Image 1 (cartoon, rainbow, N blue to C red):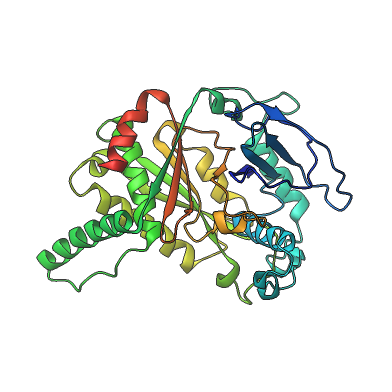
Image 2 (cartoon, rainbow, N blue to C red):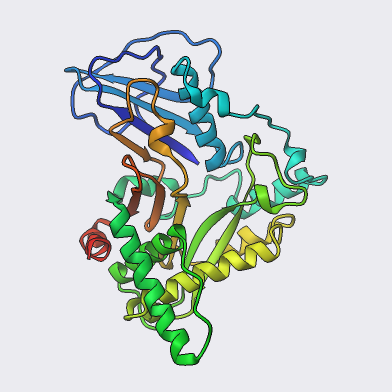
Length: 355
Protein backbone atom coordinates (compact mmCIF):
# COMPACT_ATOMS: atom_id res chain seq x y z
CA UNK A 1 0.00 0.00 0.00
CA UNK A 2 2.85 2.36 0.72
CA UNK A 3 2.57 5.70 2.43
CA UNK A 4 -0.24 8.05 3.35
CA UNK A 5 0.35 11.62 4.47
CA UNK A 6 -1.77 14.18 6.30
CA UNK A 7 -0.95 17.84 6.76
CA UNK A 8 -2.51 20.09 9.40
CA UNK A 9 -2.59 23.82 8.99
CA UNK A 10 -3.05 24.65 12.67
CA UNK A 11 0.03 26.64 13.62
CA UNK A 12 -0.64 26.46 17.34
CA UNK A 13 -0.85 22.69 17.62
CA UNK A 14 2.06 20.52 18.70
CA UNK A 15 1.89 16.74 18.47
CA UNK A 16 3.89 14.27 20.54
CA UNK A 17 5.67 12.51 17.71
CA UNK A 18 9.11 11.30 16.79
CA UNK A 19 10.83 11.78 13.46
CA UNK A 20 12.03 8.55 11.83
CA UNK A 21 12.76 9.88 8.36
CA UNK A 22 11.81 12.67 6.03
CA UNK A 23 12.70 11.09 2.69
CA UNK A 24 9.11 10.02 2.02
CA UNK A 25 7.58 13.43 2.57
CA UNK A 26 7.12 15.81 -0.35
CA UNK A 27 9.20 19.01 -0.21
CA UNK A 28 7.75 21.25 2.46
CA UNK A 29 6.57 24.77 1.62
CA UNK A 30 8.44 26.04 4.68
CA UNK A 31 11.70 25.19 6.49
CA UNK A 32 11.51 21.93 8.41
CA UNK A 33 12.11 21.65 12.14
CA UNK A 34 12.44 18.23 13.76
CA UNK A 35 11.88 17.11 17.31
CA UNK A 36 12.00 13.63 18.82
CA UNK A 37 9.56 12.35 21.42
CA UNK A 38 9.60 8.67 22.35
CA UNK A 39 6.49 6.58 21.75
CA UNK A 40 7.28 3.14 23.12
CA UNK A 41 3.88 1.69 22.22
CA UNK A 42 4.08 2.48 18.53
CA UNK A 43 6.61 0.86 16.19
CA UNK A 44 4.81 1.07 12.85
CA UNK A 45 6.89 2.89 10.19
CA UNK A 46 5.70 6.47 10.16
CA UNK A 47 7.11 9.95 9.90
CA UNK A 48 6.08 13.27 11.38
CA UNK A 49 7.57 16.61 10.45
CA UNK A 50 6.77 19.91 12.14
CA UNK A 51 6.94 22.65 9.56
CA UNK A 52 8.71 25.88 10.42
CA UNK A 53 7.25 29.38 10.48
CA UNK A 54 4.14 28.12 12.28
CA UNK A 55 2.93 26.21 9.21
CA UNK A 56 1.69 23.17 11.10
CA UNK A 57 2.45 19.45 11.05
CA UNK A 58 2.97 16.86 8.31
CA UNK A 59 2.35 13.25 9.33
CA UNK A 60 3.09 10.15 7.24
CA UNK A 61 2.28 6.48 7.77
CA UNK A 62 3.68 3.50 5.85
CA UNK A 63 1.71 0.25 5.71
CA UNK A 64 2.44 -2.84 3.62
CA UNK A 65 -0.55 -4.15 1.68
CA UNK A 66 0.21 -7.71 2.81
CA UNK A 67 -0.63 -6.59 6.35
CA UNK A 68 -3.72 -4.46 5.86
CA UNK A 69 -6.04 -3.18 3.16
CA UNK A 70 -7.33 0.35 2.72
CA UNK A 71 -10.35 -0.10 4.92
CA UNK A 72 -8.20 -1.46 7.76
CA UNK A 73 -5.76 1.44 7.44
CA UNK A 74 -8.49 4.05 7.74
CA UNK A 75 -10.08 2.14 10.64
CA UNK A 76 -6.70 2.27 12.35
CA UNK A 77 -6.35 5.97 11.59
CA UNK A 78 -9.82 6.62 13.00
CA UNK A 79 -8.99 4.73 16.19
CA UNK A 80 -5.64 6.48 16.54
CA UNK A 81 -7.03 9.96 16.00
CA UNK A 82 -9.98 9.20 18.29
CA UNK A 83 -7.57 8.20 21.05
CA UNK A 84 -5.77 11.51 20.51
CA UNK A 85 -9.07 13.34 20.92
CA UNK A 86 -9.63 12.27 24.52
CA UNK A 87 -13.33 12.02 25.29
CA UNK A 88 -14.39 11.98 21.65
CA UNK A 89 -17.76 10.25 21.11
CA UNK A 90 -16.24 8.51 18.09
CA UNK A 91 -14.11 6.34 20.37
CA UNK A 92 -17.20 4.73 21.93
CA UNK A 93 -18.56 3.62 18.55
CA UNK A 94 -15.44 1.75 17.44
CA UNK A 95 -15.58 -2.02 17.77
CA UNK A 96 -12.75 -4.08 19.23
CA UNK A 97 -10.16 -4.84 16.53
CA UNK A 98 -8.88 -8.32 15.73
CA UNK A 99 -6.22 -9.66 13.39
CA UNK A 100 -7.12 -13.36 13.09
CA UNK A 101 -6.64 -14.13 9.41
CA UNK A 102 -8.51 -17.42 9.69
CA UNK A 103 -11.62 -15.26 10.03
CA UNK A 104 -11.14 -14.17 6.44
CA UNK A 105 -9.86 -16.94 4.14
CA UNK A 106 -8.41 -20.21 5.49
CA UNK A 107 -5.28 -20.97 3.44
CA UNK A 108 -3.71 -24.32 4.45
CA UNK A 109 -1.14 -24.11 1.63
CA UNK A 110 -0.28 -20.48 2.25
CA UNK A 111 3.46 -21.09 2.01
CA UNK A 112 3.19 -22.63 -1.43
CA UNK A 113 0.94 -19.80 -2.61
CA UNK A 114 3.40 -17.23 -1.28
CA UNK A 115 6.24 -18.86 -3.23
CA UNK A 116 4.10 -18.92 -6.37
CA UNK A 117 3.24 -15.24 -6.01
CA UNK A 118 6.88 -14.35 -5.42
CA UNK A 119 7.86 -16.05 -8.68
CA UNK A 120 5.21 -14.03 -10.49
CA UNK A 121 6.32 -10.63 -9.26
CA UNK A 122 10.07 -11.35 -9.03
CA UNK A 123 10.88 -14.21 -11.42
CA UNK A 124 14.64 -13.54 -11.51
CA UNK A 125 15.43 -13.61 -7.81
CA UNK A 126 17.96 -13.05 -6.33
CA UNK A 127 18.49 -10.56 -9.15
CA UNK A 128 16.62 -7.33 -8.49
CA UNK A 129 13.85 -6.55 -10.96
CA UNK A 130 14.46 -3.51 -13.10
CA UNK A 131 12.66 -1.72 -15.88
CA UNK A 132 10.51 1.27 -16.61
CA UNK A 133 7.54 -0.12 -14.67
CA UNK A 134 9.20 -0.59 -11.29
CA UNK A 135 8.41 1.60 -8.30
CA UNK A 136 11.14 4.13 -9.12
CA UNK A 137 9.08 5.59 -11.96
CA UNK A 138 7.12 7.59 -9.38
CA UNK A 139 9.90 10.19 -9.57
CA UNK A 140 9.30 10.92 -13.25
CA UNK A 141 5.51 11.11 -13.03
CA UNK A 142 3.38 14.18 -12.40
CA UNK A 143 0.68 14.25 -9.74
CA UNK A 144 -2.55 16.19 -9.68
CA UNK A 145 -5.37 16.28 -7.14
CA UNK A 146 -8.97 17.23 -7.96
CA UNK A 147 -11.65 18.08 -5.41
CA UNK A 148 -15.02 17.09 -6.82
CA UNK A 149 -18.03 18.66 -5.13
CA UNK A 150 -21.42 17.01 -4.76
CA UNK A 151 -22.84 18.87 -7.76
CA UNK A 152 -19.96 17.81 -10.01
CA UNK A 153 -20.31 14.19 -8.92
CA UNK A 154 -24.05 14.20 -9.53
CA UNK A 155 -23.43 15.67 -12.97
CA UNK A 156 -21.16 12.75 -13.92
CA UNK A 157 -23.63 10.20 -12.56
CA UNK A 158 -26.53 11.90 -14.30
CA UNK A 159 -24.67 11.91 -17.63
CA UNK A 160 -24.01 8.17 -17.40
CA UNK A 161 -27.59 7.42 -16.36
CA UNK A 162 -28.95 9.51 -19.24
CA UNK A 163 -26.78 7.68 -21.78
CA UNK A 164 -27.83 4.33 -20.33
CA UNK A 165 -31.52 5.25 -20.31
CA UNK A 166 -31.35 6.40 -23.94
CA UNK A 167 -29.81 3.10 -25.03
CA UNK A 168 -32.25 1.00 -23.02
CA UNK A 169 -35.20 2.99 -24.29
CA UNK A 170 -34.07 2.49 -27.89
CA UNK A 171 -33.75 -1.23 -27.24
CA UNK A 172 -37.08 -1.42 -25.41
CA UNK A 173 -35.43 -2.61 -22.21
CA UNK A 174 -36.14 -1.74 -18.60
CA UNK A 175 -34.71 1.42 -17.09
CA UNK A 176 -31.16 0.73 -15.83
CA UNK A 177 -30.11 0.96 -12.21
CA UNK A 178 -28.41 4.29 -11.33
CA UNK A 179 -24.63 4.10 -11.08
CA UNK A 180 -22.83 4.45 -7.77
CA UNK A 181 -20.37 7.22 -6.99
CA UNK A 182 -17.44 4.81 -7.23
CA UNK A 183 -18.53 3.43 -10.60
CA UNK A 184 -19.12 6.92 -12.01
CA UNK A 185 -15.78 8.37 -10.87
CA UNK A 186 -13.80 5.24 -11.76
CA UNK A 187 -15.35 5.36 -15.23
CA UNK A 188 -14.57 9.06 -15.56
CA UNK A 189 -10.94 8.55 -14.51
CA UNK A 190 -10.48 5.56 -16.82
CA UNK A 191 -11.97 7.39 -19.81
CA UNK A 192 -9.81 10.44 -19.06
CA UNK A 193 -6.73 8.21 -18.92
CA UNK A 194 -7.51 6.63 -22.30
CA UNK A 195 -8.32 9.96 -23.96
CA UNK A 196 -5.28 11.77 -22.57
CA UNK A 197 -2.93 9.04 -23.79
CA UNK A 198 -4.64 8.82 -27.19
CA UNK A 199 -4.57 5.02 -27.26
CA UNK A 200 -4.85 3.58 -30.75
CA UNK A 201 -8.09 2.25 -32.20
CA UNK A 202 -8.33 -1.48 -31.63
CA UNK A 203 -6.12 -1.47 -28.53
CA UNK A 204 -7.77 -3.06 -25.54
CA UNK A 205 -7.56 -1.18 -22.24
CA UNK A 206 -8.06 -2.19 -18.62
CA UNK A 207 -8.96 -0.77 -15.23
CA UNK A 208 -7.94 -2.46 -11.98
CA UNK A 209 -9.57 -1.86 -8.61
CA UNK A 210 -9.99 -3.74 -5.35
CA UNK A 211 -13.25 -4.96 -3.84
CA UNK A 212 -13.81 -5.39 -0.10
CA UNK A 213 -14.82 -9.01 0.57
CA UNK A 214 -15.73 -8.71 4.26
CA UNK A 215 -19.49 -8.74 3.73
CA UNK A 216 -19.31 -11.04 0.69
CA UNK A 217 -17.79 -14.08 2.39
CA UNK A 218 -19.82 -16.80 4.10
CA UNK A 219 -19.66 -16.36 7.00
CA UNK A 220 -19.04 -12.64 6.70
CA UNK A 221 -15.89 -11.16 8.24
CA UNK A 222 -16.50 -8.92 11.25
CA UNK A 223 -16.29 -5.14 11.04
CA UNK A 224 -13.36 -5.11 13.46
CA UNK A 225 -11.04 -7.14 11.22
CA UNK A 226 -7.90 -5.09 10.59
CA UNK A 227 -6.20 -7.38 8.10
CA UNK A 228 -6.25 -7.71 4.34
CA UNK A 229 -9.58 -8.83 2.88
CA UNK A 230 -9.83 -7.60 -0.70
CA UNK A 231 -9.92 -9.06 -4.18
CA UNK A 232 -8.64 -7.58 -7.40
CA UNK A 233 -11.25 -6.71 -10.02
CA UNK A 234 -10.41 -6.23 -13.68
CA UNK A 235 -12.57 -4.20 -16.06
CA UNK A 236 -11.79 -4.51 -19.76
CA UNK A 237 -12.74 -2.58 -22.87
CA UNK A 238 -11.78 -4.39 -26.11
CA UNK A 239 -11.32 -1.19 -28.10
CA UNK A 240 -9.98 2.07 -26.68
CA UNK A 241 -11.97 3.94 -29.32
CA UNK A 242 -15.15 3.05 -27.41
CA UNK A 243 -13.96 5.04 -24.39
CA UNK A 244 -12.98 8.01 -26.53
CA UNK A 245 -16.39 8.27 -28.16
CA UNK A 246 -19.50 10.16 -27.07
CA UNK A 247 -20.65 7.17 -25.02
CA UNK A 248 -17.23 6.55 -23.53
CA UNK A 249 -18.38 7.24 -19.98
CA UNK A 250 -21.18 4.72 -20.33
CA UNK A 251 -18.92 2.07 -21.85
CA UNK A 252 -16.42 2.51 -19.03
CA UNK A 253 -19.14 2.42 -16.36
CA UNK A 254 -20.64 -0.78 -17.77
CA UNK A 255 -17.24 -2.45 -17.84
CA UNK A 256 -16.69 -1.52 -14.19
CA UNK A 257 -20.16 -2.81 -13.28
CA UNK A 258 -19.43 -6.06 -15.13
CA UNK A 259 -16.21 -6.52 -13.14
CA UNK A 260 -18.12 -5.94 -9.90
CA UNK A 261 -20.82 -8.44 -10.93
CA UNK A 262 -18.14 -11.04 -11.74
CA UNK A 263 -16.61 -10.56 -8.31
CA UNK A 264 -19.97 -10.80 -6.54
CA UNK A 265 -20.81 -14.04 -8.35
CA UNK A 266 -17.57 -15.72 -7.22
CA UNK A 267 -15.78 -13.62 -4.58
CA UNK A 268 -12.82 -15.98 -4.17
CA UNK A 269 -12.25 -16.89 -7.82
CA UNK A 270 -8.58 -16.68 -8.74
CA UNK A 271 -7.38 -15.99 -5.19
CA UNK A 272 -6.32 -19.46 -4.05
CA UNK A 273 -4.13 -20.29 -7.06
CA UNK A 274 -2.88 -16.80 -7.86
CA UNK A 275 -4.45 -16.86 -11.33
CA UNK A 276 -6.09 -13.46 -10.82
CA UNK A 277 -2.81 -11.62 -10.35
CA UNK A 278 -1.12 -13.75 -13.01
CA UNK A 279 -3.70 -12.49 -15.48
CA UNK A 280 -2.97 -8.89 -14.56
CA UNK A 281 0.79 -9.40 -14.91
CA UNK A 282 0.26 -10.12 -18.62
CA UNK A 283 -1.43 -6.77 -19.34
CA UNK A 284 0.66 -3.97 -20.89
CA UNK A 285 1.06 -1.24 -18.27
CA UNK A 286 0.70 1.43 -20.93
CA UNK A 287 -2.95 0.49 -21.48
CA UNK A 288 -3.90 -0.14 -17.85
CA UNK A 289 -5.26 2.31 -15.28
CA UNK A 290 -5.76 1.65 -11.59
CA UNK A 291 -8.20 3.08 -9.03
CA UNK A 292 -7.32 2.67 -5.36
CA UNK A 293 -9.25 3.33 -2.15
CA UNK A 294 -12.90 4.41 -2.09
CA UNK A 295 -15.04 7.55 -1.77
CA UNK A 296 -16.34 5.93 1.42
CA UNK A 297 -12.97 6.31 3.14
CA UNK A 298 -13.33 9.41 5.30
CA UNK A 299 -9.66 10.30 5.08
CA UNK A 300 -9.98 13.84 6.44
CA UNK A 301 -12.16 12.99 9.42
CA UNK A 302 -9.97 10.00 10.30
CA UNK A 303 -6.88 12.21 10.30
CA UNK A 304 -8.28 14.77 12.75
CA UNK A 305 -6.06 14.39 15.83
CA UNK A 306 -7.81 17.09 17.80
CA UNK A 307 -6.74 20.25 16.02
CA UNK A 308 -9.13 20.10 13.09
CA UNK A 309 -9.25 18.29 9.79
CA UNK A 310 -5.93 18.34 7.93
CA UNK A 311 -5.45 20.74 5.06
CA UNK A 312 -4.42 17.88 2.77
CA UNK A 313 -4.44 14.08 2.80
CA UNK A 314 -2.67 12.13 0.07
CA UNK A 315 -1.68 8.56 -0.69
CA UNK A 316 1.88 9.33 -1.70
CA UNK A 317 2.94 5.89 -2.95
CA UNK A 318 1.43 6.21 -6.41
CA UNK A 319 4.01 4.49 -8.57
CA UNK A 320 2.52 4.01 -12.03
CA UNK A 321 1.20 6.03 -14.94
CA UNK A 322 -2.59 6.08 -14.68
CA UNK A 323 -2.81 5.29 -10.96
CA UNK A 324 -5.69 7.07 -9.23
CA UNK A 325 -6.92 7.35 -5.65
CA UNK A 326 -10.47 8.15 -4.53
CA UNK A 327 -11.19 9.19 -0.93
CA UNK A 328 -13.80 11.28 0.80
CA UNK A 329 -12.98 14.98 0.55
CA UNK A 330 -12.41 17.59 3.20
CA UNK A 331 -15.89 19.04 2.78
CA UNK A 332 -19.17 17.17 3.17
CA UNK A 333 -20.24 15.45 -0.04
CA UNK A 334 -16.87 16.02 -1.68
CA UNK A 335 -14.63 13.33 -3.20
CA UNK A 336 -10.91 13.80 -3.74
CA UNK A 337 -9.42 12.30 -6.91
CA UNK A 338 -5.62 12.11 -7.11
CA UNK A 339 -3.76 10.85 -10.16
CA UNK A 340 -0.19 9.94 -11.03
CA UNK A 341 0.41 10.40 -14.74
CA UNK A 342 3.03 11.01 -17.42
CA UNK A 343 3.79 14.77 -17.43
CA UNK A 344 3.11 14.89 -21.16
CA UNK A 345 -0.52 13.90 -20.55
CA UNK A 346 -1.31 16.05 -17.50
CA UNK A 347 -3.07 18.87 -19.32
CA UNK A 348 -5.18 16.49 -21.41
CA UNK A 349 -6.22 14.50 -18.34
CA UNK A 350 -7.09 17.68 -16.46
CA UNK A 351 -9.20 18.92 -19.37
CA UNK A 352 -11.17 15.65 -19.37
CA UNK A 353 -11.86 15.76 -15.63
CA UNK A 354 -12.74 19.44 -15.46
CA UNK A 355 -14.56 19.51 -18.79
